[in-house]
Image (cartoon, rainbow over all chains, first blue to last red):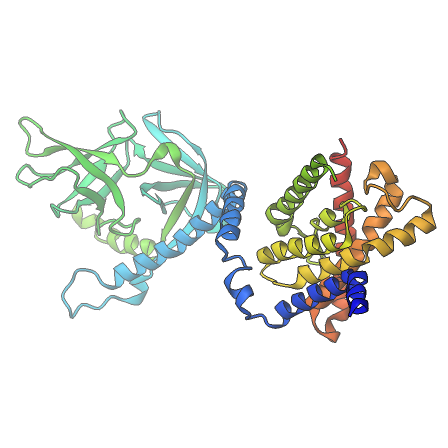
Length: 279
Length: 168
């Protein structure tokens, strides 16, 4: 008995080594054992907490990539939303949307590399051009609202007429009031715009959203333009003096979407044929 | 061991485990070179520490790393093996290269050449065990060998660099 005890003391290291190895291999082979499922994995509270901190720190280094990915995902979702919206417009049940008409809007992501808001006529420069399929006349939107319309394209750059431009008008609709008017910038404050042609007998609501109307050839309908913040009466006139806050934050523009209406050319050509009669 | 030495060792463990879990866990070169810098905590334990204590420490460290890699047992098995053969490797290298086997393991005491051989040998044993357990298949022996060699070099160089910069 004493000898056995002595043997154990003498070779205790080897016995401990074998025991620990056997325990490790038991863990490896029974991958579903209680210990490995319950405690020793990354779902452990403390392990998860530590990994969470580590991820938070690394997130800062990845923000650029994350932003690009989100912009790309938004582009995809925007395409899908417009497509679904266009398939089911408010219309009699017998009305069927043509599938080419429903899918006429296509989105592309671009980055703003130059932007002004302080001039009476403002332009925005994007880092994509005709090589990426952008053509003059396409609409440009941001995640929060309408931005403008492509004016000139070079091979890799394009210039966008911002809606903060004295000649630019957007055909828009008051959501609650259901009335169509034109939104135009008065050239003073880059966060305020005016809505024209709203007749005085329209009931106005504060905070009503102003969105792009269906009559718009370059933007899909329903995109946010701004929100009504002040309604005044114009003396001796038949219209409301409506002031909007602009939906797009022009000071923080980074990623924008260029909207292509594939039927725009066809629509314009068709409408041109009636031009001579209008005069 | 004095309290100061024990505190030193605890600091060492926190440093290397944090380094392993927070930083080099995401560091893989060319899909073959992994970095398991945490083996340094066992390599740098003083030689006078009893083998039983070293084995238990190695097991604990292995389990902590396994928890974060979701591979319960693999790192523990490899690290325990490495801790068990450490005294034999030290005795062998001490006899061959002529240094005292009751030494403190650091570049400063051993010289960078001896220290590098010591780190390289034990890291190789650890990685050899680890990647073969992970491969768990004879057909994967060659790919595992590539990983073992690349990772041994990567880990050893990382440990040497950390040692150079934390010498003071």
